[in-house]
Image (cartoon, rainbow, N blue to C red; front, side, top):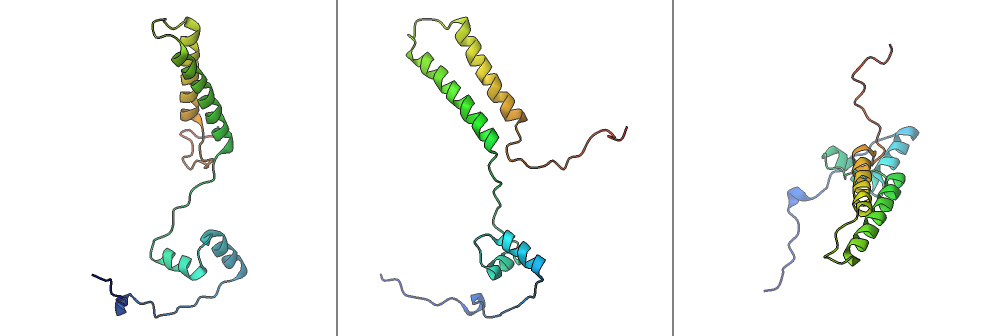
Length: 128
């Protein structure tokens, strides 16, 4: 059966136009926030609480740190894969694996991945 074109329902057509006047600073903010969206489309999305998700900029130093740790872990895994299955791990190999896993764990727990300032404040009075 062929698809038949059906026009949109009348209640779904956008027939109303609303204009708004902005000063220069308001227009600059709108232009920064809307990214690739048209101004009217962005304002409608804001009004309907349907804004696109803002993805934070990548933290390049954290990315480089994780890439370096990943590279070293891959080298260790390759070494262990080449090693004969019947020979036990040496103390040096065990130490290297533990160290790299510890580095990775430390970076994952302490790295500020998205460089977002914290709003949590301090538990103690810092004026003392």
